[in-house]
Length: 308
Image 1 (cartoon, rainbow, N blue to C red):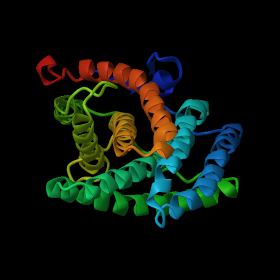
Image 2 (image 1 turned 180 degrees about the horizontal axis):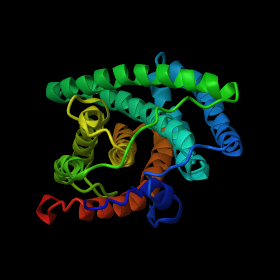
Image 3 (image 1 turned 30 degrees about the vertical axis):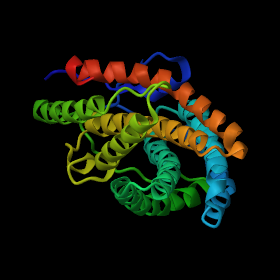
Image 4 (image 1 turned 180 degrees about the vertical axis):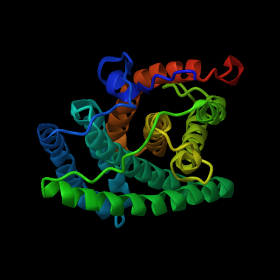
């Protein structure tokens, strides 16, 4: 069987810009000290949700407050990836609960970006753009509600000094499973490459198109019938699905930050100038690690240069 070494990209790439390789088929159960360390790390995340949640809810009455809230949530999201995620012990329960927490942290920011994207589309005279933006917002709103409900149970357990139980029994993937994974990720990453290259110099209309495409790819991977739920049930598949899912999420977030920044500049509201600058700076900080992660994944799954 061809061996796959899973690349836990966002442990290495967000922190040191070098991918950190880790075997995942022999993660041990967490010791009591590792459980305590994980709870201590994640308590701050639950506190952050509690503080930022009301701010996000208040934007429904005043949509122009949302860009400012996006700045706060972006910092929260970035802090999770650069400070919390790398500190989690390499044991089974800790990795499992952190995967779930990471998905929620990303889902919230993506939902807020998608909400603001619909606002811009609704202000335009382009009915096709508005219809597409509304469709994307509706599916993201549904999954946001589902993920928020699930993580609420996790928050309760963490507050009680416990981690959720983890279903054991994932074995190493066999040759057939690896072939399925290769085919799936080649198709997924080729679609990602064909969407275009996200840069600070990309035209606003291209950024908007990339945001929509990346958003659909991320959503379909996490929640679509042919995505994660249809992949083989084995350890390499489980870890790789989350790592590439997080890479897709970060692509959505970077494109969304640039989308909001350029749209606010175009609106010409001087009160939004500083916010627009903060958002584009945040996007810029994410582009380098995204590019490094992309290079590793494109090489691993042999994404054709012609697709890029």
